[in-house]
Image 1 (cartoon, rainbow, N blue to C red):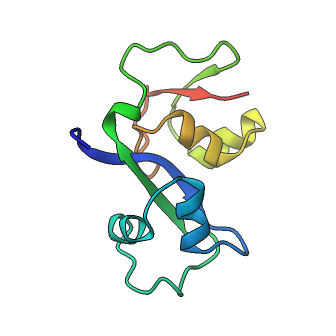
Image 2 (image 1 turned 90 degrees about the horizontal axis):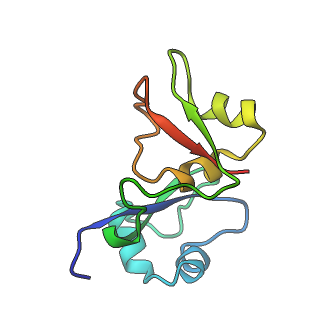
Length: 118
């Protein structure tokens, strides 16, 4: 990879998941998944853990790219959280995060425009 390695997706661990099955789903080496997510014990994967799925920054949407026609826009306002936004639009939190890979889910800035997948 010539470009910088970034999180191109966020995966939330579910019951039955292993690092191997997650790595296989994204066609990644388990060792890379462990290194990027600072995992030292691959057998201590906990349900609900959110994992950064690494990839080349060229895989991210480019600034100015138009969202898919079935995508709505939401402008972040005071008090918004990704959970509340997902609930408002009836979509999964992970889907919003996938549609907006450049946002920091723990530090939403007022005025940020988010793509809301339908």
